[in-house]
Amino acid sequence: MSTNSAGIVCRAGSEDDSRQIAEQLARGIELEFDPANGGAMIFLNGTLGSGKTFFVQALLSDLGVDDEIVSPTFTICVPHRAKDLEIWHMDAYRIEHDEEVDDLGLDEALSGGKLILVEWGEKIAKLAPPQDLEVQIEVLGQSEREFQFRAKSELGRALISHISQT
Image (cartoon, rainbow, N blue to C red):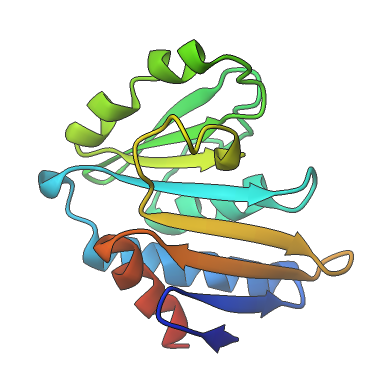
Protein backbone atom coordinates (compact mmCIF):
# COMPACT_ATOMS: atom_id res chain seq x y z
CA MET A 1 0.00 0.00 0.00
CA SER A 2 1.21 3.52 -0.75
CA THR A 3 -0.25 6.83 0.39
CA ASN A 4 -0.30 10.50 -0.52
CA SER A 5 -2.44 13.45 0.51
CA ALA A 6 -5.09 12.82 -2.15
CA GLY A 7 -5.35 9.05 -1.95
CA ILE A 8 -3.93 5.62 -1.39
CA VAL A 9 -3.22 2.51 -3.40
CA CYS A 10 -3.89 -0.95 -1.97
CA ARG A 11 -3.06 -4.28 -3.56
CA ALA A 12 -5.20 -7.34 -3.00
CA GLY A 13 -3.72 -10.73 -3.74
CA SER A 14 -7.00 -12.57 -3.28
CA GLU A 15 -10.74 -12.11 -2.93
CA ASP A 16 -10.28 -12.25 0.85
CA ASP A 17 -7.86 -9.31 0.63
CA SER A 18 -10.42 -7.38 -1.44
CA ARG A 19 -13.07 -8.15 1.19
CA GLN A 20 -10.76 -6.82 3.92
CA ILE A 21 -10.30 -3.56 2.02
CA ALA A 22 -14.10 -3.26 1.66
CA GLU A 23 -14.42 -3.95 5.40
CA GLN A 24 -12.04 -1.09 6.18
CA LEU A 25 -14.03 1.28 3.96
CA ALA A 26 -17.26 0.13 5.64
CA ARG A 27 -15.73 0.88 9.04
CA GLY A 28 -14.83 4.36 7.78
CA ILE A 29 -18.38 4.92 6.52
CA GLU A 30 -19.83 3.81 9.86
CA LEU A 31 -17.53 6.18 11.78
CA GLU A 32 -17.36 9.19 9.45
CA PHE A 33 -20.58 9.38 7.44
CA ASP A 34 -23.49 11.20 9.06
CA PRO A 35 -26.59 11.23 6.82
CA ALA A 36 -27.90 14.22 8.81
CA ASN A 37 -25.13 16.28 7.17
CA GLY A 38 -26.19 15.24 3.65
CA GLY A 39 -25.43 12.28 1.46
CA ALA A 40 -22.22 10.85 0.12
CA MET A 41 -21.29 9.52 -3.29
CA ILE A 42 -18.61 6.97 -4.12
CA PHE A 43 -17.71 6.14 -7.72
CA LEU A 44 -16.30 2.70 -8.53
CA ASN A 45 -14.47 2.52 -11.83
CA GLY A 46 -12.68 -0.27 -13.64
CA THR A 47 -12.91 -2.48 -16.67
CA LEU A 48 -15.61 -5.08 -17.17
CA GLY A 49 -14.92 -7.92 -14.73
CA SER A 50 -12.56 -5.91 -12.53
CA GLY A 51 -14.63 -6.59 -9.42
CA LYS A 52 -16.73 -3.47 -8.89
CA THR A 53 -19.87 -5.42 -7.99
CA PHE A 54 -17.89 -7.87 -5.85
CA PHE A 55 -16.43 -4.94 -3.91
CA VAL A 56 -19.86 -3.34 -3.45
CA GLN A 57 -21.28 -6.69 -2.27
CA ALA A 58 -18.53 -6.99 0.34
CA LEU A 59 -18.93 -3.34 1.38
CA LEU A 60 -22.71 -3.56 1.76
CA SER A 61 -22.48 -6.84 3.62
CA ASP A 62 -20.04 -5.23 6.05
CA LEU A 63 -22.44 -2.30 6.49
CA GLY A 64 -25.18 -4.75 7.49
CA VAL A 65 -27.26 -5.08 4.32
CA ASP A 66 -29.13 -8.38 4.57
CA ASP A 67 -30.81 -8.54 1.15
CA GLU A 68 -29.28 -10.04 -1.95
CA ILE A 69 -26.84 -7.64 -3.60
CA VAL A 70 -26.80 -7.96 -7.38
CA SER A 71 -25.43 -5.80 -10.15
CA PRO A 72 -27.91 -3.05 -11.06
CA THR A 73 -26.78 -3.06 -14.70
CA PHE A 74 -30.30 -3.33 -16.09
CA THR A 75 -32.26 -1.62 -13.31
CA ILE A 76 -29.71 1.24 -12.96
CA CYS A 77 -30.46 1.62 -9.22
CA VAL A 78 -31.15 -0.83 -6.40
CA PRO A 79 -31.96 0.67 -3.00
CA HIS A 80 -30.75 -1.02 0.18
CA ARG A 81 -31.04 -0.29 3.88
CA ALA A 82 -28.52 -0.99 6.61
CA LYS A 83 -29.55 0.08 10.10
CA ASP A 84 -30.38 3.78 9.71
CA LEU A 85 -28.49 4.13 6.44
CA GLU A 86 -30.24 4.39 3.06
CA ILE A 87 -28.00 3.19 0.25
CA TRP A 88 -28.41 3.42 -3.51
CA HIS A 89 -26.33 0.92 -5.50
CA MET A 90 -26.20 2.24 -9.05
CA ASP A 91 -24.67 1.22 -12.34
CA ALA A 92 -24.07 3.90 -14.99
CA TYR A 93 -22.85 1.46 -17.67
CA ARG A 94 -26.04 1.70 -19.75
CA ILE A 95 -26.56 5.44 -19.38
CA GLU A 96 -26.18 6.99 -22.81
CA HIS A 97 -27.74 10.46 -22.66
CA ASP A 98 -27.19 13.48 -20.43
CA GLU A 99 -30.90 13.65 -19.64
CA GLU A 100 -30.72 10.19 -18.07
CA VAL A 101 -28.30 11.51 -15.46
CA ASP A 102 -30.75 14.28 -14.53
CA ASP A 103 -33.50 11.67 -14.18
CA LEU A 104 -31.50 9.70 -11.58
CA GLY A 105 -32.32 12.20 -8.83
CA LEU A 106 -28.80 12.27 -7.42
CA ASP A 107 -29.07 15.80 -6.01
CA GLU A 108 -32.25 14.91 -4.14
CA ALA A 109 -30.75 11.65 -2.88
CA LEU A 110 -27.70 13.46 -1.57
CA SER A 111 -29.75 16.16 0.12
CA GLY A 112 -31.78 13.32 1.67
CA GLY A 113 -28.68 11.80 3.28
CA LYS A 114 -28.30 8.70 1.12
CA LEU A 115 -25.04 6.86 0.50
CA ILE A 116 -24.75 6.43 -3.28
CA LEU A 117 -22.39 3.84 -4.76
CA VAL A 118 -22.03 4.19 -8.54
CA GLU A 119 -20.37 1.52 -10.65
CA TRP A 120 -19.00 2.96 -13.92
CA GLY A 121 -19.15 6.39 -12.28
CA GLU A 122 -16.70 7.82 -14.81
CA LYS A 123 -19.51 7.71 -17.39
CA ILE A 124 -21.52 10.33 -15.48
CA ALA A 125 -18.78 12.20 -13.60
CA LYS A 126 -19.11 15.43 -15.63
CA LEU A 127 -22.87 15.63 -15.10
CA ALA A 128 -23.30 14.22 -11.60
CA PRO A 129 -22.86 16.10 -8.34
CA PRO A 130 -19.28 15.89 -7.06
CA GLN A 131 -18.38 12.55 -5.56
CA ASP A 132 -16.63 12.16 -2.22
CA LEU A 133 -14.47 9.21 -3.14
CA GLU A 134 -13.35 7.54 -6.34
CA VAL A 135 -12.25 3.91 -6.32
CA GLN A 136 -10.37 2.75 -9.41
CA ILE A 137 -9.98 -1.03 -9.58
CA GLU A 138 -7.26 -2.48 -11.81
CA VAL A 139 -6.93 -6.17 -12.64
CA LEU A 140 -3.44 -7.50 -11.88
CA GLY A 141 -4.21 -11.22 -12.13
CA GLN A 142 -7.08 -13.68 -11.77
CA SER A 143 -7.81 -12.70 -8.15
CA GLU A 144 -5.30 -9.90 -7.77
CA ARG A 145 -6.48 -6.30 -7.83
CA GLU A 146 -5.11 -2.84 -7.24
CA PHE A 147 -7.45 -0.36 -5.56
CA GLN A 148 -6.71 3.32 -6.07
CA PHE A 149 -8.70 5.45 -3.64
CA ARG A 150 -8.88 9.17 -4.49
CA ALA A 151 -10.51 11.57 -2.05
CA LYS A 152 -12.66 14.25 -3.66
CA SER A 153 -13.92 15.86 -0.44
CA GLU A 154 -13.23 16.14 3.27
CA LEU A 155 -15.41 13.07 3.84
CA GLY A 156 -13.44 11.18 1.20
CA ARG A 157 -10.19 12.00 3.03
CA ALA A 158 -11.71 10.80 6.30
CA LEU A 159 -12.83 7.53 4.66
CA ILE A 160 -9.39 6.96 3.18
CA SER A 161 -7.77 7.47 6.59
CA HIS A 162 -9.48 4.29 7.80
CA ILE A 163 -8.07 2.29 4.93
CA SER A 164 -4.54 3.62 5.33
CA GLN A 165 -4.44 2.65 9.01
CA THR A 166 -4.06 -1.03 8.20
